[in-house]
Image (cartoon, rainbow, N blue to C red; front, side, top):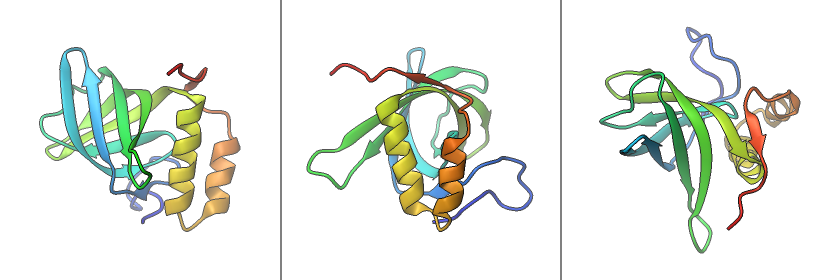
Length: 133
């Protein structure tokens, strides 16, 4: 687990390393990869190919450890790409996905008080009503 970006980065928020599989859908393209790091505001996915920067997308993170894997879906926008993968900023998510995301970051962070403060800040993305299953 690692908190924050390296000192040279300008991004805000606690970022943690995780061992999650991820999938990104944008238009007709589906890209699978591995989450390198995760925050309450976005994710970096190790993958090839990747979705073009600026594209809107749907991110699915697969939580394992329970009897059945739990998919957590979040809408986002690809903010940058590089040779290893892509950074996605979250733009909208169901309330239950926000709860899973918060717990994931809390569990993997060494500064839970900071994560709680970040969670209490008004989100820059919209919260969707719970999805109907």
